[in-house]
Image (cartoon, rainbow, N blue to C red; front, side):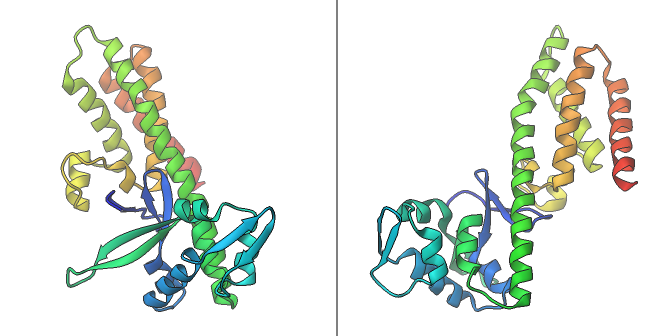
Length: 247
């Protein structure tokens, strides 16, 4: 896949094109398996040819477990694999490119469902919770992206002659309140390329706070509140939210 993978620091899952993804390398590491063994298991499932007729699933090979057969029964198998498994490459310590497979929640559960034992069960439960939290993060991320044009429109309408720095200053103010630094400083600190959005690299709390402040800021701009006063109001607002969460 050519799109850049971004690892969420809270959920330790990847975000790409609005999908939450778990890698075959993570499966191997977290379940204490060899990566080549995990890849082989994935291949046995995804390359396995099957026929679906109504609710009946007929195996052409004996590679699939009973649990897998039950999970896939009645589904369009080729579509399932296409939508939930993605080939990818990663660089190892020597710089060599190696194969890995990225999986959605459904794809991941299909692979790990056969792992048994108390430790494996605990990891699977934790993984489900991570996917749920990651999907909430992606929802907030997309909401912040979708609502940002409303903020720029409010800035545009509030000024007779809006300049580029008016929009830059507003976004910079919100970033400094939430992150304690500008987007430029955040990029430098986290090794993010110039011009690349920092938002996919934020924690769930950070992106939610940005989403919240954007909404509040729109109201303040429409209400005619000046920049410095807005800054004070937004700072106080986020401080109150932090105190409530800590209580």
